[in-house]
Image 1 (spheres, rainbow, N blue to C red):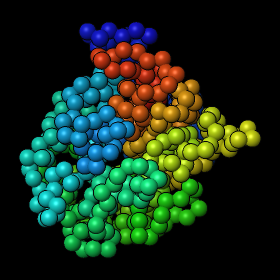
Image 2: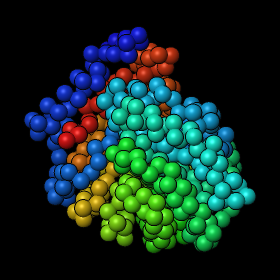
Image 3: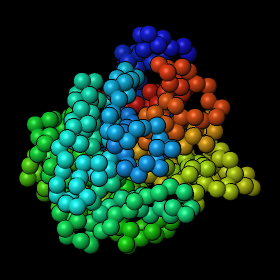
Image 4: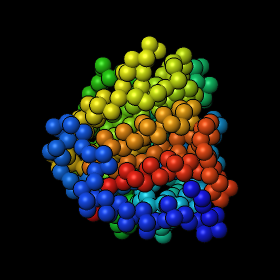
Length: 409
């Protein structure tokens, strides 16, 4: 496939062609491979889930600069207009901005926000409006809560400045957490929820109650987090009753939260399963990725026995059919494979994973747009990259992603 860098067009990825193809496929009842044979999936409403497809953009990801070794961003909040343009041109309609509250918050007074440092977020929202891309604001690090704080610098070599207090234990920290969202709700009141939504915090987990394991054998309860959500929702609703709100699933985005079904807010799953494949030789997931065989798909152990396949994915994500039965929308807000996973394995995994997610009638997003989990500048060895405006595009992955988007109607 060839690309015209002057026009930014290709017959294979022209936006109109993409959308016409998607609409025709849906009209014909083509569910990109058909529904998995799980009875749970047959009962899912077809209309409640937002049809969001896109990527995470990281320009305000973390004040800890070690992450800049692994992700191509400048830590300055200057979200790139080209990212929004290409996301739109290639048929996608959603970006998530995982952000660190410390960029704009006074470290000595967590209720004091620097308006000037919020202006890059204003600009990103305007870019979303310009290019018809929904913007989802997410606190990747919030007062008293960040999943990165579970990491051990001695193992990963990545320095993390951890939270000094806990949103689950300290009322002042909970007040500061809710204040972040109250501030954004007031600042962006009047912007349609079709254009903007709030994702309260990335991958919630009460680190005082549980530590990450290598399996799902221990699933800590979400009770303390539910209290945080309700406080934050009240703060948002006091300023903007109509703002669309999203919560990641509990237990690092893996589990739906039935205790919040009554709120009807969107619940978001993160798909990095199996982690031996998605985070193979990944720097910040060393306990998962060292000393294991080069992954295959389906995933095999050292003896060549298949241990994870498409049916395993159906079973793994089966619980995410439950919210829909209660009128609660879902979305898969993060997924992807790091650059060390071989390309053919990545394509095969995406093909099956996106079919399973599609059977749930859910949209999805990759962790990166540009970077090791994305479609531009992944650095994945063995990929047949195409030149794209000074970037290296994984065109095969782009085509695969485009083929897996359900009709927007």
